[in-house]
Image 1 (cartoon, protein in one colour):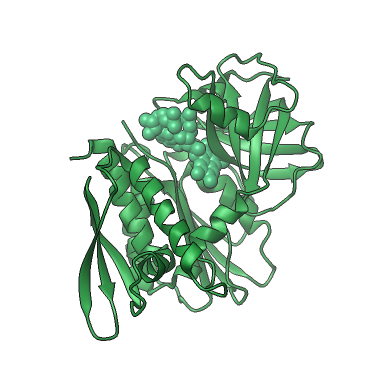
Image 2 (cartoon, rainbow, N blue to C red):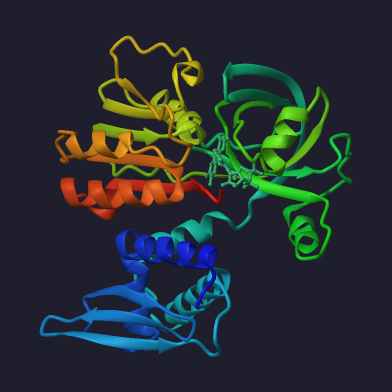
Length: 357
Ligand SMILES: Cc1cc2nc3c(=O)[nH]c(=O)nc-3n(C[C@H](O)[C@H](O)[C@H](O)COP(=O)(O)OP(=O)(O)OC[C@H]3O[C@@H](n4cnc5c(N)ncnc54)[C@H](O)[C@@H]3O)c2cc1C
């Protein structure tokens, strides 16, 4: 049996692949498993020895068990095997077979840059969000707008100076060793100006190295950032948006709505702890609905899902962007996909963090 944390990651992985990466599953079925007649594939189960798939052709539905080369220990090994199958399938697929959503995402990580920048100033946004403005070293950072996010690599010594030419590769090598002094996590660019960006850091219970760094950082503290990337990819005919976010994804949503066309309609559901963590934002048309967790902990709020279960919205030309705690977002994705009959291209749902306490 997998340990609890791996099993939770694997459950989330199964949901994500079945809901969103079904095009990758189909590619694997056709060209890794040589099941050329298959029209739809879903993962039924993953154990330490095999992945059980349901393959559907025009005539029948059958079960196929794909054995791991050797028993897998955790969700990372399962994920590695999945990417191996995908790359093997791609190698055998005809040249004109379309790229899958996952392959397009992987492609975006090629040729990203690492930038060393410094804290310019800090500002309080709400009782659990602080804004840090970073300046210098990012003159060549592309402005992707919307939910553009970067991988922030911080050192445990707040006064650390990064060596000249420090890169994501250096971090990867060091991260594979014991007592790596660096930690990293993704954060969104809230606002972009020339050679300067604002980032909103959520301060939370059980702060990890990044939340701690954000609290301790002072003027001129250095950070390495790798990116940028986005997942916000509405189809061209979209004219209505639904945004769903806890505190971690509110910067991504605000940057995205500020970049919408004037004729576009949008609705935002923002979950936060309570009135003190609600920040001021010019919202003349009342497009933002605030939902308070109250006594419930971050990642465990139930009100948001209840509200979404009742939402009445026309799915035609709608694009839904949702991000927050992984299990919460997985439930929301399943609910909205079912209730609104959304196509995979009409939605981007991302687990921005995973509750472990
Ligand atoms: C694409 C993307 C964009 C993101 N953008 C932002 C952003 O703009 N601002 C932002 O604050 N975060 C953002 N996040 C989330 C952020 O990367 C995570 O919250 C990260 O885990 C924080 O790292 P840490 O070192 O503070 O905590 P970790 O070491 O990862 O976790 C320590 C403990 O804190 C808990 N925890 C982690 N995050 C939270 C939280 N937000 N609330 C409550 N408990 C938490 C964990 O469950 C764990 O128990 C983004 C994530 C992604 C994938």
